Every structure is written in structure tokens, then in C-alpha cells.
Image (cartoon, rainbow, N blue to C red; front, side, top):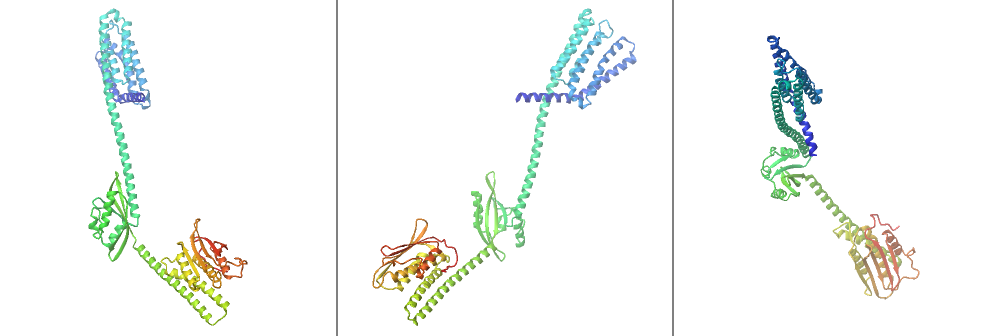
Length: 559
């Protein structure tokens, strides 16, 4: 790769060396041509009959070479052929040296000037033409060889060896001087070329850097414009401070608020505490914390602005440069309206909660009134079957009223603590069937359910416990009745009502329509998507399996 680069640079230098020398070469040929013509004209006017003048005119053979050399420098399309053209022209000049030399024997008057003319031709090759160095040496050697051959053919060497070697010495001397001159010119041009190339490369890099900086400046300007427009489009109040807690910028929303409140609009460079004397110390501490840790801090801020109380949510965002926090952007969202809406919602929720509690309380009272009306009806009726039916209805109503009482007293109006509810219901049923011969055993795992699940479970427990108290221990039999609520392994629950009484009659069936209570139990178990299992060993055991909160919010129906 280095050799290829050197070759390319040398070729580039040679083109530069040749093309850059054209003006000076053209000027040199003009001056040489004019001087030659003036000297010829002078000799024509003063010494036109002398043999020397006629010999001098032979040197005009070099004029076409100079004229062609001048002409080709004016045609740029020929520049790529200049090296070849100049080589042929100088070879032609060498041929001219040989031709003129054939007629320049020591016997010819004026021949003494021949070797001087040859020296001018040789020195002209090295002075005017910027060809490759070894090409110049070869052309000069060709012209010197033409001079030597011409002197041999014109018998100068035979007639006067002294003159031959004397002239040859001067020609070779001029040839050597030309080589030195060409070498010096070439080295000088080479240094200038390298300096110029380096300067051009640096200049090109500088221009590229300038263009890149201009482009970066434009992009930065566009970015800043977009950045400022983006910040100004944010409806929140936004400002940026430096490490001295001085304003760096404010967005348009905050500037408009400053204008409305009569604050200073030209805040850039001013301390935050001077513009906002009411600012809280905690806010300044949070800003300093962002500078220290480089982490976003979110907080709330409350202050009075005019006659209004402003509730704000603030975000302190770090702005980094070279992995250091140089500025902090504070974004404040005015949440006063949202705060009012939240407070209004909270008031509505509290009012609704009060209303719901009142509704549950009134439902419980209304159900209690219904029970009282049924009791009044019993006072005027002595039919045992009717009394039994009304007492069963009363117990069902009381189980429903008990749910509303628990909701009324509960902190959560949506959920009922099922264990507490079943405990209360069991105690009410026990007090209804008062007596010391039956012992009630209860155990309940904690479970909170909604009213849609609590109501059917309460009615199921009511029917099963009531039937156990009424039929499991006839006459004076004694025993135990148990009710349990247990958590199962399959994320479900089990309600167990058990007695060690006389057991169910052989004809008992859950599908029978003769017993309204069992019919109700079967419907309610289906409604909660549960399963019921009956065991007749050592009394009777009803096991109801159900999932927690699986019943949708629909009305309870016994149809």
C-alpha cells in the first residue's frame, strides 16, 4: 500500500512539475526567440554579406522546436500529451544539432560558434523543460552524442583534435551544469510540492472541519430550536437552574404565569429564591440532591399564588454533560383542579358510604319490622303448622337481616367477614331453640366474601342448622351440632353442618319437593356453583364445597 502511494504521489508531482513550469517555459522561449530574431535582424542589416551571417542562419533550425513548444502550452487538451511532445521536440533538436554540425567543419567560416549554439541547446533542455530527471539526462546525452558524431563526420576530429576536445569539454561541462540545475530545480519543486500538498490537505481538512462545524452548528441550532419549542409546547410550568440555583431558562407557560401574577419575566441569571421568595426549603434541598446524586426526584409542593392555593407535582430532572450534572430541570404540574376533583370524589365516596350504611341499616330495620309483624300475626293464631311455617320464615328473614347488619357495621361495605356472620347466625338459631340438651360447636376459618355469596351461604346454614335443631334430637334426646368453615386444598372452601342425632329418614332425598328447606338448600348450592354431599354415619353430615367469590353480582332467586 505504501509503494502504491509513493508511485501515485510521484506521478502527481510529475504532472504538477510539468504543468506549473509552463508559464515560465513559455516566457523563456518568447525571450529566447525574440533575442534570436533581433540578433539575426541586426546581422542582416549590418553584416548580411559576411560568411558568418550565412552560417548563423543555420541555427534557425531550432525555431520550429521553440514555436511548437510555445503553441502546445496554450491547448489544455494537449496537456496529457505534453511529456511525449516535449521528448520528440528535444530529440528533433538533437537531430538539428547533428544536421547543422555536418556543415560546421573547422574549414567553414563561423563554425567556431557551432559548439556555443550546441551548449545553448543543451542548457535549454534542462532550463525550460520539466521532464522526468532520467529522461532529461537521456535527451541531453542524445544531443551531446549528436554533437560528437557531427564533429566526427565533419572531420573536425581529424583536422584539429584540439578544437574537437576543447569544444567537447565545454559542451560536456554545460551538460553537467544542466544536470545539476535540473536536479536542483526538481528538488526545489519537490519540497514546494510537498509543502503545497500538505497545505492543500490541511486546507481541505480545514474546509471540511469548517463545513462540519457549520453543519453541526445548524444541527445544534435546529436541535435547540426543537428543544425550546418542545419545552414551550408543554403546558406544565418548567424552568432550568444551574448549580448556583440561578435561572437558565423558563418555558412559555411559566412566563405567561409570571406575567399574570406580576412576577419578573426576565429571570435568566437570577437566584431562584429572589424570584420565588415563598419557595420551600425542601424544594431547594431536592434540587441540590439531584446535583449530588444525578437521580430524578419526584415530590409535591403546595404554596399560595395570589388568592389561590396551588397544589403541584414536581419532577427534578438532571441534565448531564460529560457525565456530570450541570443543570437541573424542574417540571411542575399544577394539580389544583385534579386535587379539587379528588377531594370531591372522596366526599362523594364518603357520602355514598354513609348512604349505603344507612340503606343497610334501614333494610335491617325493615326486615326486623317484618319479623315483628309476623310475631303479631302468631299471637292471634293457634295453628301449630302455621306457627312452624312462620317461624321458619322468620329465621330466613333474620339470616338476611343479619347480613345487612354486618355490612352496616363493617369497615368494607363490599365484603362480609363470613366467619363472624356465621358465628352470629349460629348464636341466633341456638337462642331460638334454647335448651341445655343440645350443644353447639363452631369453628370458622377467616374468609371475606361479597353479599352475593354471603346471602346464599347464610340461608344454607340457616336451613341446615334449623333442621338439625328441630329434627335431629326428638323428645328429650341430647347431643352435639357442629358447624365448620374450612379452607380446602384446591383454593376452595368447605361448609360443614354435622349432628350426632337420629339421622335422616330412609325416604329422604334432596330432589324431593316435599321439604321446602331442602329444596331451598339445593337451589342455593347450585346458584353458588357448589357441590353438596350427605353422610348418614353417626348422625347426619352435610358438606358443601364452593369456590371463593365466584358468584356474579346478580339477584338471589329461589324460583
